[in-house]
Amino acid sequence: MQKILVTGGLGYIGSHTVVGLIEAGFDVVILDNLSNADKTTLDRIAQITHHTPIFFEGDIRDTELLSKICLKHPDIKAVIHFAGLKAVGESVAHPLKYYDNNVVGSIRLIEAMQKHHIKNIIFSSSATVYAPQKEAALREDDSKTPSNPYGQTKWMIENILKDQYGSDPTWRISVLRYFNPVGAHGSGLIGENPKGIPNNLFPYIAQTASGIRQKLNVFGGDYPTADGTAMRDYIHIDDLVKGHIAALKYSSDHKGYHAFNLGTGKGTSVLEAIKVFEKTNEVKIPYEVTARREGDIATCFANADLAYKVLGWKATKNLEDMCRDHWRWQQHLNQCRSH
Ligand code: NAD
Ligand code: UDP
Image 1 (cartoon, rainbow, N blue to C red):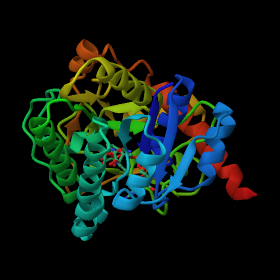
Image 2: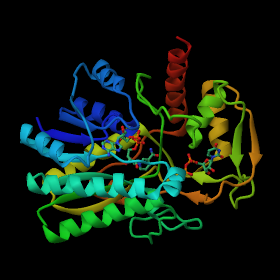
Image 3: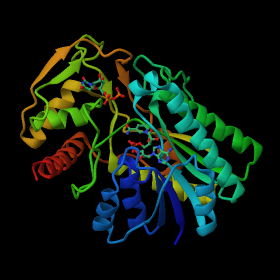
């Protein structure tokens, strides 16, 4: 059984990936500082998989702790590195916090990996590294111009990893650039639980459908798209998890540095997302079209051909699946709130 260290393994994408890894027969060690996660997620993972993964509460910048984990678990074969801060607006207000947590944290982690001969990493990057593009799907080699400190941290870490591979070609590095992950595990027991007012569309839609928010503001109705609202490439969390497992399997036979887009290749407008959410879940989402959100772009979707060609991975779930599973999770949260 291969042992994998998952940093940020109690967060949204991390927790789903931990479930996927356990179900695929991997042994998992989690490191998470709980800055954006709750320890009860560990119990939820155990409830779903009937297995409690090893958990270390702590920070990826803590060199001593990293050494302790590596010495205690010398059979760790690879690291899936999710730990990071991810709020774009906060990164503009507190850039140093982001560079420290994400970039310095990744350097500390890569140093520990090098020291303990764990030269296999899968890194969570983002579509935000790309320069905005008019209509075409984004390809891995398209130009990169991150437009905020959060995106900068992702692009910097990608480059650090690339240079690390340049200095030691025995490394196996997979950079996965996620588009817009949404949805939740089919059990309804784990999912994304944003603190405060959600920034992202799907959590906002789900809270509006629940009556927690009065109405959804649709940011911009004058984009050059079919219905005037902005388009994104929403991808079901289950598909994203499968992308990580495909990358892990690929890296066990291949050294090298690779970057892959993980998206569906299909753009969905804000109005389309609202309509499908309403129809699939038989709910009403009051909305109003308002001004554009600063910094937003009209369209952003993946060309995911490379991941299919190299990893044999492609997304299989559709927008209805995403809306249904997101709603099931929101209903679970609503129940927890009412108790
Ligand atoms: P999340 O906030 O739910 O999970 C991140 C986890 O990392 C949290 O559990 C948090 O407590 C932990 N963490 C943060 N800093 C840490 C540190 N210094 N040491 C230890 N643990 C730390 O976020 P997510 O949505 O699951 O995202 C996971 C990764 O994917 C992040 O790196 C994020 O930037 C990236 N990503 C996310 C999206 C998205 O839309 N969710 C899109 C593209 C990329
Ligand atoms: N959006 C919106 N209202 C909201 C939140 C988001 O209209 O309350 C729009 C946003 O302008 C963008 C799309 O939904 O066009 C996806 O936004 P999200 O923040 O989820 O992802 P990102 O913009 O980071 O790709």
